[in-house]
Length: 276
Image (cartoon, rainbow, N blue to C red):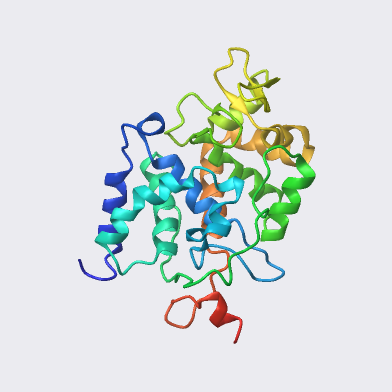
């Protein structure tokens, strides 16, 4: 395959999304989650973490409880890496998230190549930088403000919970009835459904609808409890186009965290950047 043929990589990613034996028959949601978690370790103060480096390949980051289940996403993408050995894991993981969102009827997210893979564990960010779903609005802000996001962007990115379901993290179930199609249903349900705090089958507290078919996390409920977050929940519930536009902008920003490119677009490795 021709090096730099990202269209071919996109097509290969599309072909791997249908997975009959995986959640709801689709790898799409877990590919989005991989891109999200690979990028969401960024700390703007120190300049560490983020999507450059693909450091989740190393045990320290892979073992973070917030990353449970993401080995499946990496496994789905490994044949594509072997097919296109010139693409970095960092580029492949982030591109897969973008392709999956579009495949599932979501917005087109701007994406640029050029990330490089770290060759050792030296710059693996510490565990604990990803959101803890058991927490409330103060925790959410501390996590996202650390990366450089504002309240509006926090709510927009939370809309990724239109996709997939929880398991392997202590929480159980999908957020929406159709977890393989991108939409603003998550926001509508946050506002329109009655949510009851219950303990699930493994004894973890979460929120379920009356029929016990859908669930919300404590961090989800914080978005309707906090008035500054809630205003954006209401806007996105009412205006799908606005949500799609804002989500695409915020997700594109997320994927660029920790990426500092040279004049030709190729990113510096973190350990090389530290010597600049």
